[in-house]
Length: 213
Length: 245
Image (cartoon, rainbow over all chains, first blue to last red; front, side, top):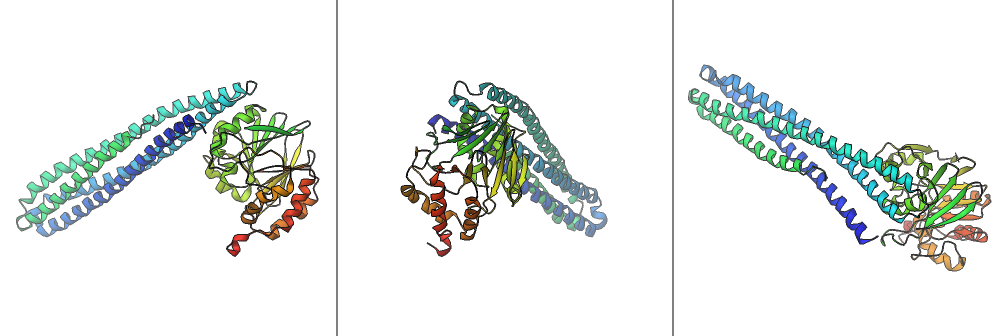
């Protein structure tokens, strides 16, 4: 195998390895997000129990806990959706890698073909595959954009959760003996929201690595 | 990659091999092709690493769109790991291989290649003017394994049976059977697992009229060397790893 051929092949491998790694990283990060959102849901249930014990003093807390729970459920659902889409994107990347490899191999093959060999047949099929690859790149870009939109949706949910944390702290001051308990819950949710935000930042970076070259 | 015609009649048998550009660390393989009018059957087209060389060699004797069928003698990567590339290039291609390897061999492609399963008892494949036979060679070495026999051209493509580990650039045919035995011995003793399967195969193959026995590695056997090989193989104790040797 010539040096040129082996370096060309290794570039293809590096590029596809980068994509697979990016998808795996996004999946791992989203798994962590899912775990954190479960914690948020648990905090919301905890706050609900505290508010029930606090009775009329913590009346304002009931709709807040329901809302926090909803946010946690929404985040979990979005994470599942993103995971499924990231997996599809990964399969796309594999298909693209195979197609690119076929095209490369066909071009390499043409270099070694004898004058009278079937150049027309291989040229025609290479052009068809190149066209399919171009269309594929368009589809891939669109799917990648959809993923980033889903991530943005999670960020919207987090913004809402942050506002709720602020409201929770205000409501906690009216809960008398239960003030500190409810403040702890608000802190927990706030911390979880920040954790998710940081993780999503990393996921956004990894998704940008998925763009095909 | 060298191409050599094995049979020339209303159709052709061609061997492709001895690729000088093959990466050193992969085993050398012989690829075969039967060109019959507008249908070309590729036999054990080889691994991914040698795809471009095999393609170039194939298109020097066949039109791209005429490559309609691939036969895989068994499931090993040096036999058929190029399947995904062939399938991407020729989406209508049919793969003929053992029924029990279907779920395994599909791992080498995107999974939706047209798979024509061969039952354990064997069968035939009809090209344009000729019909080839699938000869069961199970456990030699693979659990589900087939040879291809052409009764008209008197060629037996014997897969890994008769294979030899050779230096690069070896001649295409065995020229001295006695000196060739050393190159086959370890391969057969270690890779072939069953003396019983070996005896059964030899019994059936002795009944066939064979001019050329064409293995997937190493040199081809011609004329009396075919019988010499069968006699040598019959006396060889195989499956040696069972005894830890």
